[in-house]
Image (cartoon, rainbow, N blue to C red):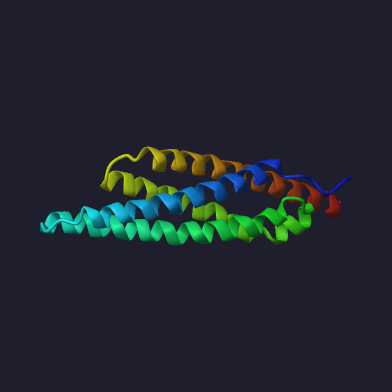
Length: 152
């Protein structure tokens, strides 16, 4: 039995991640720029603008980390089942990072307003995380099946 299999869903999810994280970093940078332009003197506006700025800065930092993690995970798309299982934590951390970014994007859209670009990026990140989880789960089932066959 050939243990090497191509994980096309993982590859598609990671490519979606890289593109979405780059777009999210650019979008958040532009949002910070316009937030500083709209700075107002009222205390309520200052609190909202500070929270929007902090969420955008957090999105930029997480996006840069996400690009690095997704790029590293691209090398794991052609690994054998055992090797993939031993290096699964980086892929899980990429999946968790996707979920965190989706939650932060929803919080951002709730605080400010629904930004169409952020909405599309969030939907694409949801698709990417589903793709990543599909191949992770498939490999997990293959690993369990292979271990049960080896024990017989």
